[in-house]
Length: 203
Image (tube, rainbow, N blue to C red; front, top):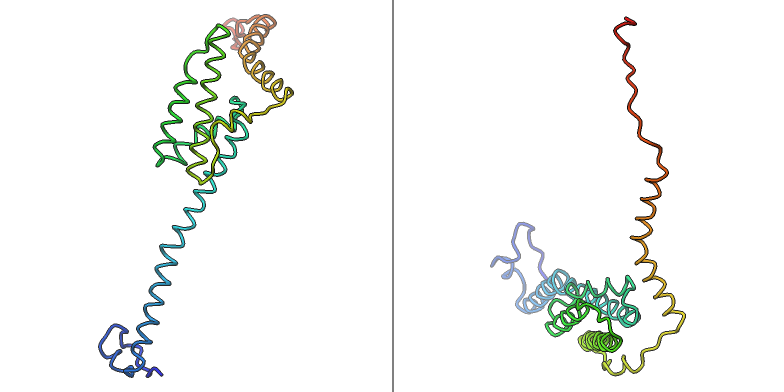
């Protein structure tokens, strides 16, 4: 049983510990250490665990987006996911290298001949599959690039929708130019501003 002491006596002072019976000093020390450990856990460990979980959730969300949209690269969600990789996987050198190779391949001008275009498309999909596979491995999942390439499936309706979207985006500049020319053709002729000031003769 602890002996009551004055509130002015510090818990770290010698008077405090001498006021505690010898048999209770170890128990009091254990209680103090337990309180200190609880404070450290609440202040340091818990926020670190929370931040780590939030980071992993964001990484898994990005991986799911890429898996669902990698066959339709013009999808805004796919473009956003590729852009966010340096933010969510900045510490993963292999992932960043795979992303850089994909960006480098995509930036190569599209070949005009059929064979060159097919080869370029296959190479781009290989880089996409390798990138997704590395992201999955970092999160503890096993998704070989071959399984993505061999198991890729997309309906003809989805392909038609993607092509229609790309054609619409390509036509926007032509539509804007046509509207601008139409407005110029049917716009009323410019007139000189009317001077509303009274003439000197009238005054």
